[in-house]
Image (tube, rainbow, N blue to C red; front, side):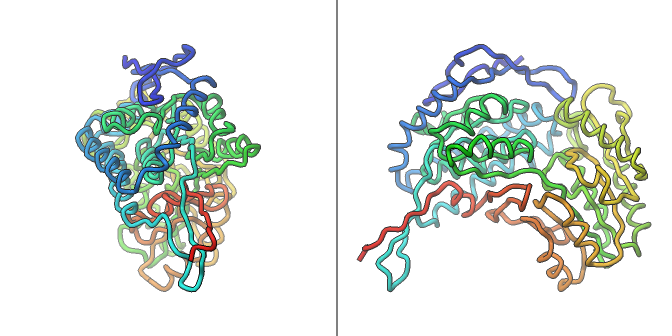
Length: 476
């Protein structure tokens, strides 16, 4: 068993104040494979103090100095790429090909893009030619970064790298369910030789270290990715200190498939939902299908879902692995059972374990048809390989159904009519709209409306989250 009962504080690995062991479970076999320590108030306070001291000098570094550090980090990341892929596969059950080609690759991509954006970013500028005002962009200060288990290094990179880039110092709390990738990233940072105290890592759970970070009077900003429920608690905990709170939360994306969509639109939509075992906040888990092609779409969806293999993470291939934990597994199964009891048609999958897998948190790719938007499976974020198919008659009806949710992270639409695509995209209430399977480019902002959050990550927007803006008059 891996022994990871140390924190990275003030440029060194240190023992926690109190022994509070927590076993990290391999979701493929339900067995513990590592032990970490959950931090305490004293651990958090020590990390914050370290970050405070480091901020006084780190905020004065030049842009070129910070670029140099990040380029060294990118080099180390590339060198240890395989280790990161193995860590993510082990801790969250991601099949090795997916862990390497998508999960681990995302961390490298964010590093590369932030370096590019930082090179072009102006931290001070004159307001306009006739004005004597000058605008400065300054680091916000000490940042608490709380990251999830479903895209571990992706979210760590989206927070840690722009914090570095803007001159902030930080305390990272990775998910206690999948902490090994975060600790490996800390090793990379240590290998680069960032000044002590600029980056600190304290493991812990939400009720412990998470609450300490969000309410800490000496932390200037909290950036959190996770559930909407946890986001509400963080906002409440942070309220007394008036710190900036950036939230990237849950979603219940809709995927509108019009009758004039391209041939494989439904099949691609199924693959999109089932990838990462359905554990993506912007997964399009409601597929809305125009009634004239509904029967064909259902047939394609069921056929594609039945083709998706479920297997061990250690095996190569394009199969999906388990969901992350017993808690998540039980929640997903409960929602599948609620879909059945509420009258939706179970067209593929179901609550039973996949054939040949009698241990681990594996769930069959599951399709419900004849779903209405009032059912739990259409309203609640399931966070597993489960899709609801909802018929619609008109464009306006489809828009109304998609927007009939408290979330607003990512929505999708499929049509060969460009004018219709642009018209519908502008009416969908979400931070991202993906047309005909086109992915967002590197450096575009990612975030949501309403209960999907209030921040934006990635590119220039990701840098700006960590900056204060100052106006100085009388410059000329």
